[in-house]
Amino acid sequence: SHFLLSQGYSVPCVPELDDLTVGGLLMGCGIESTSWKYGMFNEICQCYEIVTCTGEVQSVTEESDKELFHTLPWSHGTHGILVSATLRIIPAKPFVRLQLTHCEDRDSLCKTLESSVGTGDHEFVEGLAFNPSFAVVMTGSYVDA
Image 1: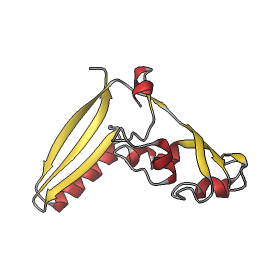
Image 2: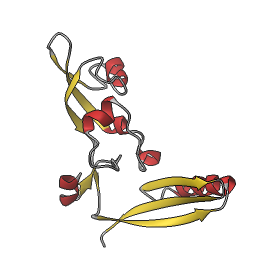
Image 3: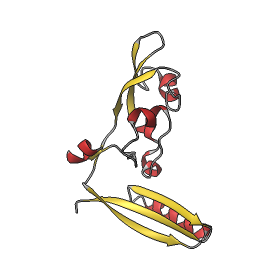
Image 4: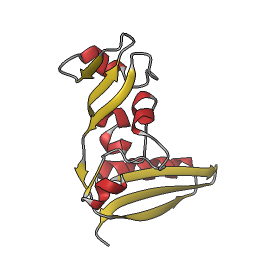
């Protein structure tokens, strides 16, 4: 993601930890604070290249093998070993401006989350509940500075 940002791009579903790998996010499960807008990490994959149990290298797209394409995510390598993936990218600015909204109860938290995703104005939406009477909704948008 650092390389892509230096070129003015990002993957739509931005991993929040640098130690997460593309293979782990695709073959395991990847949901991030941009998933409300772009879906889970596997939904930005356009092509998987796997090595099957017979040693065959297979490129898998939705067009070439729809069933396998949709069963590879969360398969944890049972269909083959992922060796490469083609991911969709989007234009991105170098910084993210965050806005925090404090919520005093579950109803307030739910309404704030619904409002945040309802407008579609943000790239990132994340909610954290610290206890039944204190939660925070964070929204983020790409900015130049």
